[in-house]
Image (cartoon, rainbow, N blue to C red; front, side):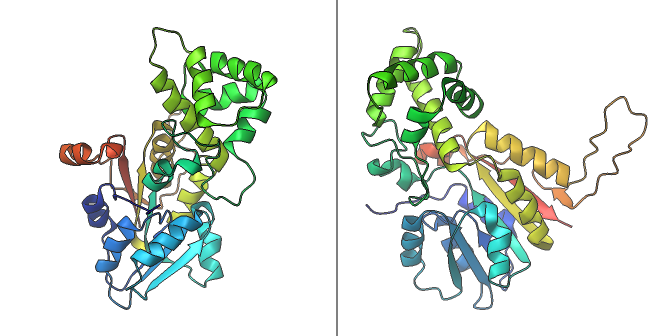
Length: 308
């Protein structure tokens, strides 16, 4: 299947990266290289782009798309490990970083990956197909309490307990193997007067986040990235749900030097250190036209931090 990718808020990302033609830039979620191809247009032969992705299909597709550029380095890995990755290739400072979080259009559209509730597939959901943990293992091996926790915390699902209980009941009869089997179970657990599709979305999101550990090291990726930036360098992060956005917002705010003392303290005693400034007090969102042309952009938010 062709690795199709429509870069979200492309114009806004490029504007906020403040690209220097001889700079070093990191795309920590390379995907189909939609954003990276535009970044490269703004770089001279003296500039460098480092593309990181945990999905080997994405790396192969991006390599084909960017085959006319010789100032790109492709690295199989996780954006959470970017500091170690860059040190391994003797790069200690960069001028800009982009993270486009969440699942790619290719991963959603490729039925065999099991990310979509609309397509029949084995329960997989691995961004890195070489890791061991799959959605099938989570659904069939996690305790009822563990399932409730991830459905509520990662999916913000109101019927987490009912759905977790029904999963445990059904897996005692037979192993739950496919996306359609899981959807049938979710549908049976949700009250008849509620839209089951909303629960499909939230449960599949929760499972995907758990399988890929998407939130566990996001704060680390942000802090490490800011540490890597040169003075004036920008960190752009696109999120797609409130859990990611909250982590990005709070981490950027803390790195800007927000006081964390209790409000009733007469003076600040935490002495926060500022590493830069938040460029986006409110997140940038796609234009109405982009949301119409690319419905998957509707929930996207872009936040930007600048190193000082």
